[in-house]
Length: 113
Length: 252
Image (cartoon, rainbow over all chains, first blue to last red; front, side):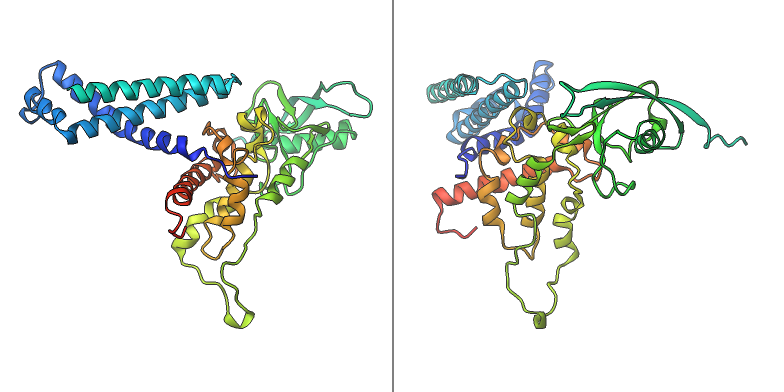
């Protein structure tokens, strides 16, 4: 039997899963701090805006959003499968298409930013 | 101090009975078995067979959690009957053969599928470096031993297969036990057979059928943690894929 090409999808899934496990909680805490007005000066709006406007900031934001989307799309596909929904081609096409659209939208927004 | 360890307790067992030669379908049969509270479910079955119904069929051998023969569903959970202690159960105890396998008779599951898969993944040492007797032993550091020791504890009891929903849904899946054993040899510093095993386990019916439910590790009586073995195989196979497709000049 031929070796599978699944690593293409699983690579982004694993990387995205690891990333969201570490980064998402931090982002949530920072967002909460910002919402309650307890952000340190270093992370003030102007400074973060400047960071996000630079090419490096854009790259970081894109990688985080892209990998999160793809990992969650794959997680959702596996969840469907585990629950016995065997329409894998339909499910896979739908969730990956959503992740794809999300990635393109991210690119467009970042390019215009 | 009263010693009630030898107290007799009437245990109600609901045992799945099936004789493919005479029965249309399996059915549950109730037995009341006088048991010592410190017994395990296997002791209760042995008493039942010796004293109540000698036609009951089930597998067992060592009675000490090393042979892996007495795996069965106890109250719906895959367990070794010799490790399921009666003191942990109250009420009726339901005993059935391992899920996801055909029934040979009563509590005996047909293990042919697992045995065939085990053979496919070559779970034995394929020496990486040929040595003669005169060259002496293959030496290994404690750190090298630690890399595979956990996975070497597998006793082929098939509880992980009965627990795995993916194996239940897709029987061609090579499954947690066999892939963990392949990983055990892949991780061995003396071994050189990884490429041969990858041909079997880096496939869609190999490790990629796994969706990391983790039930295999929950039920493993020897704490092998098959789920971690399969995750490690996925990472290694992903690295392989990128090397094979984009950096074929790099040695794996």
